[in-house]
Image (cartoon, rainbow, N blue to C red; front, top):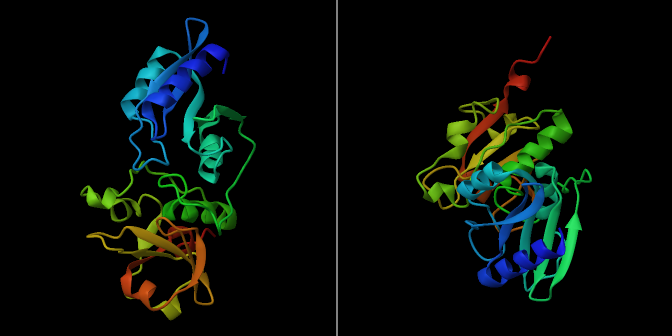
Length: 242
């Protein structure tokens, strides 16, 4: 990002402070141009570019970079920043505001650890840890789904609506002692629909990522069993290839 676009991004960060500012770098008429975007993320410590703004930038020219600010925090990328950078395949530019420190990063093959990853809805959340486990342990790439924070309060039921297209089947009356490694447990946490999920690891343990906490391995029992609504198994296990 050149000095002119850094200046534009800095002014944008000042306008949006204390929320994170976000924008895109676009090649327009042969020049890099900074396009400020609206942040529709929840809270002050995350950003989600408004889909309309992304389309507008894409129509303006080729998108070649992503910008966002870290209000009152260093410019070093978070785990979520690194994961999202990998997904975008673009350079990322981070500004610490108001200190003015910059950090640039490129895709480098980063994969967040399954245990101890920080929460960032839509990037590092309970479905993300399931996708990453299946990719690492089974070589299966589960589809990703666009999701906004607290979708379960917006009348959506993303797990129930999409588990079939992700390759899973509900097992009905399977008891905990009959679960297999890789089974996915849907749970209902203060919600009208299942809004949390975990992977069964065997030996009575689950891997999951609860909102606002670090991902963790926990004993499956008590509260977790009580709020479980569905047990899902991937079709490659139910109907293995010959």
